[in-house]
Length: 392
Image (cartoon, rainbow, N blue to C red):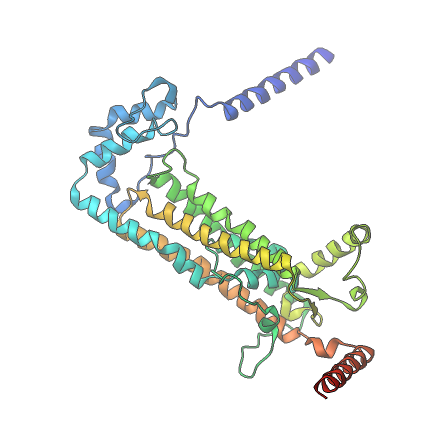
């Protein structure tokens, strides 16, 4: 029995070592491209691939770049030694008409990230959903389904409190009157957010294996990288909002300015509170009370970094999408339509949650106690007296 156990452990260790060697080995390359083309001109590419570029495609399928020479004059490199000959052969045998159509598709795709950024939710809105609405999981799903980040002006004075201010004529969402309806509403929100995120993930994967990025041709994850990079930008926006505003409860009013040790001690309680509020739509939550802080140097610097990162992210997305080869204009329009649907659906979810937060929000002046109001009035009176004395 012991021999069998030792033998089984050795087999498992050998399999694990083989997997690690396969993953970490640089001698094998991904060979998932050129298997499925987009339909508008895909049949032409497949015909050329199997009749005019069969040898280059066979070399690509080996997945062993060390066995072939680099076509330096043709633009090949250390990592694109297998992909570049296939791309060069396909482009050399396809007609100029198809090349012109592909060029127009690249132009359309290149302007997609700025368009999505204009239609999508901003970092402040998603941060409001996470910090004030206390629904970070829903905000995470929406940030993945919203791949392009809204551009904010650098060094603008942001007032997140204005997103929670009520005004006459604004939309007021329906508030479910039973627990069952509340759970149904929350489930619908997560299903919609998951659907939008799944659509973006599937679209990024299909573009990765169905096309070739002209400047990053050795990988199929370029679109996924652009999509995933929106998540840390939205998380940075959440941190920035916490420097200006936080949600409080009656038992948390004294827990705003606390030390690190006390913060760690209260962390399980806070996580439990986030877990409870995560599954409750904002319109169904208790009264929302917040506390605001003045701008500090760290907030100004962090906001500048956030705006800069947003611009870099949009430029990176435009660079990736405008460099996609072997896709036609009709295919590009379908891709843009799917991106726009996901972004608009996520925008609707965020707008609904913000409307629910406005409905449950208690403005800050109403949150102050009578002692605080008296102290503020005394300070104002002393300030006016000092000003008058100086004038005299």
